[in-house]
Length: 255
Ligand SMILES: *[C@@H]1O[C@H](CO)[C@@H](O)[C@H](O)[C@H]1NC(C)=O
Ligand SMILES: *[C@@H]1O[C@H](CO)[C@@H](O)[C@H](O)[C@H]1NC(C)=O
Ligand SMILES: *[C@@H]1O[C@H](CO)[C@@H](O)[C@H](O)[C@H]1NC(C)=O
Ligand SMILES: *[C@@H]1O[C@H](CO)[C@@H](O)[C@H](O)[C@H]1NC(C)=O
Ligand SMILES: *[C@@H]1O[C@H](CO)[C@@H](O)[C@H](O)[C@H]1NC(C)=O
Ligand SMILES: *[C@@H]1O[C@H](CO)[C@@H](O)[C@H](O)[C@H]1NC(C)=O
Ligand SMILES: *[C@@H]1O[C@H](CO)[C@@H](O)[C@H](O)[C@H]1NC(C)=O
Image 1 (cartoon, rainbow, N blue to C red):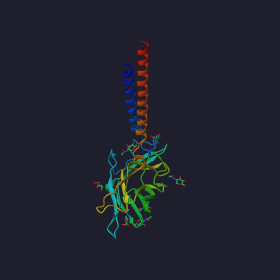
Image 2 (image 1 turned 45 degrees about the vertical axis):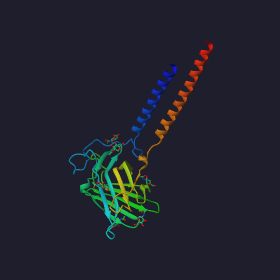
Image 3 (image 1 turned 120 degrees about the horizontal axis):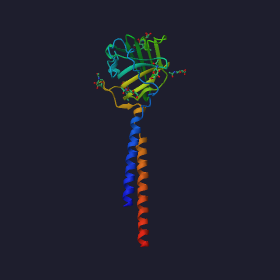
Image 4 (image 1 turned 180 degrees about the horizontal axis):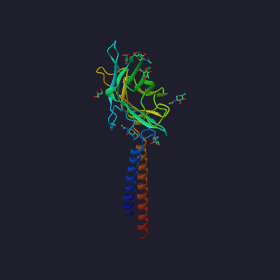
């Protein structure tokens, strides 16, 4: 009887531990996002070319083909926005794919991809070494007032310093659902639905196997925590059961 009660109690504990772990998983923000910077709700800073801010940033496949070999050397399936987030000014510019051109050049171990639009451009410099492909320089220039209230407006110039951006193995694609890159001076480049690859695309110009960004690699910590909790509970149950039996045995003896 007592054992049954202990069992029921422990079952409840186990269930609540599981749901706690789930909550923790769901509430965990992507590692690349800084919670201090929220998307600005103001609509005034959306490019004049958009009548209304789209609910999802439009994505597109931008690609470049080597003119000599007719081989596609880079393809990026991305949606981009440039965001200013400082205590004094906020604003977002959403890159409109239908008003954007992909230009640049393909070389044996270097590819430069520039997305040009009326208000500016964004450049990715891809590099290939013996084991991986990565972007070692990312920059943009934007001639658009992100926050009309602020005097020190455009042009906005953003640069990312990292030497290991969008890294993937050769023949693989880089994949990330949502990431935000610090471009300096309170400027961010937000990239969503992100899949890109330079060099060694498939013969039909498709992406290779995705290599996921660190924020999307499976997180085993929650699973391990749940496993350990369950193990501890099982041990407690067994010990409680054995103790209960012994007590009962003692009881019978005293009779
Ligand atoms: C910009 O947004 C941040 C975070 O939402 C807020 O703290 C700040 O006051 C905003 N600044 C302006 C000028 O609206
Ligand atoms: C990018 O590619 C274009 C076209 O091939 C080339 O003219 C330009 O010099 C390249 N830019 C850089 C920075 O390498
Ligand atoms: C990008 O824009 C800047 C500023 O307008 C300009 O100087 C630069 O040449 C542009 N780069 C490309 C590759 O179009
Ligand atoms: C990307 O992540 C941020 C912060 O977690 C969130 O506000 C935004 O809605 C996400 N965007 C997409 C397209 O999932
Ligand atoms: C880039 O590097 C320079 C010098 O190492 C540093 O001063 C600057 O803050 C860095 N910028 C960003 C955006 O990390
Ligand atoms: C990538 O493409 C280059 C040039 O076509 C080729 O030499 C190389 O073997 C390819 N690498 C892989 C890993 O497929
Ligand atoms: C972009 O390329 C991917 C993979 O090749 C394909 O599945 C998708 O339909 C393309 N999207 C657009 C908008 O062309």
